[in-house]
Amino acid sequence: CASRPSGLGLGPSDISASLTPLSLSLLLWPLAFPRLERAIGAAACFQQGVSLFLLASLATPLLRTIPAGRSLLGLPSTAWLWLFLSAISLARGVGGVQATTSIALLLNSLLHTDLGLYNGLAVSASAL
Image 1 (tube, one colour):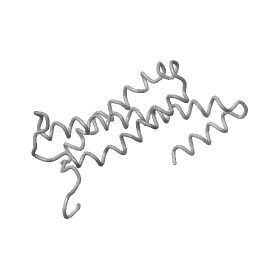
Image 2 (cartoon, one colour; image 1 turned 45 degrees about the vertical axis):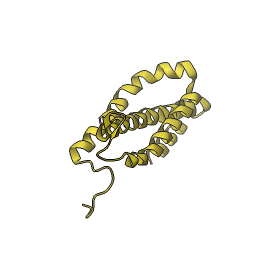
Image 3 (cartoon, one colour; image 1 turned 135 degrees about the vertical axis):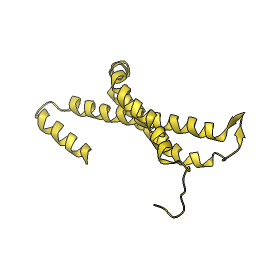
């Protein structure tokens, strides 16, 4: 344990609650992804997924700038923290699933011979 806790000041139960949107996106987004991929294509899905994941990852440290104990636009700061934390968690889940699935589709569509070999190498590399 850290001698002086830092970060957002969340306890263990708060951390698990903050991961709920991530788990919901990991559960539900694979069901919605095929429609999006058919509509815009795997390359555009990959670009969107990486962009969403990158923006969510870059926005996470900005949560510390929410002033503690003050009201912003009529909502307490804890409400803003949970709103943004949930949105970032959801965006990371959707972006990660979308980018990973898209890159697998792109790799499979590029290769015409020895598909099993290249697919196995790609899955092995992504597992690292």
